[in-house]
Length: 139
Image: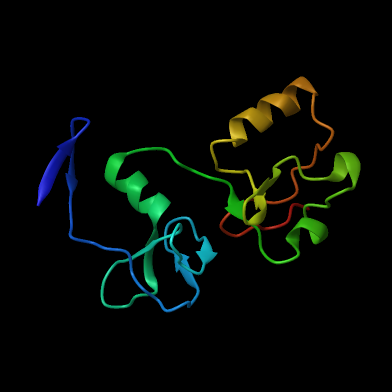
């Protein structure tokens, strides 16, 4: 069934959040890896319950809303690459969210961080990696 939303035709499915029994899933769009729960749903694309989209990406695609939140960091990345606590060498895009440290690149906070860097009002000045999904360290 198709519906019109904000002058845009969208496909509406009877898609419900997938139950994965506490197993970790990865969103195919933003590459966030998490265990689905009451707040963080996961929508499978087909028969495989581990292939699909997180709720944020599903809603963004369906309604054309920019809800790009900062991305979860790989394990121990905040120390090894982001250099937390190292003054100007600390990555300027290192943020903190409910789930721990996150990367602000390719999110709704990136523009504000870049503006503050240009103004010279940030203590952290590093640009230490490529950001999500690969988080390739800068040389």
